[in-house]
Image (cartoon, rainbow, N blue to C red):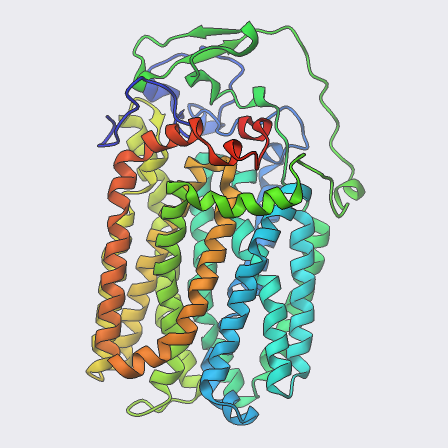
Length: 555
């Protein structure tokens, strides 16, 4: 038992459990074929193990990986985080200009969310079948179309059309970006990058009102689209030229850090060697084969610009659509999907009703003033990102060293407790501060505390599922996005009425209680997570239902 994590009784291997630190494991490199980190990380076994192919994304130069990721992150900002809250601060003014009830304007965000969610399973299947590059390119193109329609919209119907098209653009960048991190980076490199992406999705989404509010108040809401257009065009060009395909069918033998835990060596060519101090029932396998592989050359730049290089799987498209839905029957996936989806929905709730709260007495702010109140959550989200980025990997590394060098994905979960404390305090404090008509500075601070906590706990949970069920990361993140957006849609339909009927204190106390209950689910997930990973490996429903090929499960 490592830090309270129940081990598998028969000593079998649970996928996701790896020897990450050979120095702490007190073993010499019994397997010279395993690749290690460089410099101060030379004692770390790389996971996943890269192939010898220069086209393998894990082998790309570090600067190129970062460039690739930052172009995608820019898309996450412009096409993922920004469209939903773009008009929030100006809903009251836009409703007056278009002569529509305020609730109709709020629902345009709901329609954007439901389109984003409904397109999710198809995005998953396309990215699995033909790769992520064509999905990113198409999403960026759809964003340009949506912005142009928004620029010229003079009626509610035209604005609604813009929001619906924008919903199609959001889907890929809200779900596939985290999966791309898994394609590009090793386990010990992912923490800060996942944190950055989460702050883009949460804090930037709230902080955009700081800019959009004054623009709406002084220039009109159309100028939000006028200003946004050149940015989305530049991002589209950058995606076409700089974001190549990260999907890669890696040879099973390149994933040797999984094989050491298997009971028998495949094909009789592996020689099983057990370490003197066998940590956590772990074994190392050394392959001594004489067969050689032909290493291909790096593809030319123009070849890498191909729209797609697939197909990457023999699975049929309808089966892959269904697989992304069935994955919710995986308890670990369901835990991450429901907990992060429900909790992050509260920041959407606050953002949606902020215009209602601060546009009426005693605050009576204009769209610009409503936007400025969002300074608190922007700062809170950024600080939360810095905190989790600085502590997530070091915490997991510390626990790995004290577990004799063996890494468990559950080592990501302890920091959920930190995020839970700040999230619950922020929610309850925000509601009571509004109820008591406290200073707007205090309200903004509590809003920031809420985003600080949400960024921490959502990053920790999503990082856990990325490491624990990496083979299904695309389906899991897609369904996370689907659930989140459908749940958001429900929030947009009822949150304003709930606020009006119950009052802010009662509303946000209820949300705080739900958050506490959701976070408590982390305890059994932490304790029994390893056993469940082994159970899923032996009883994978996607394989049993023949929704994916066995070959894919083994890779």
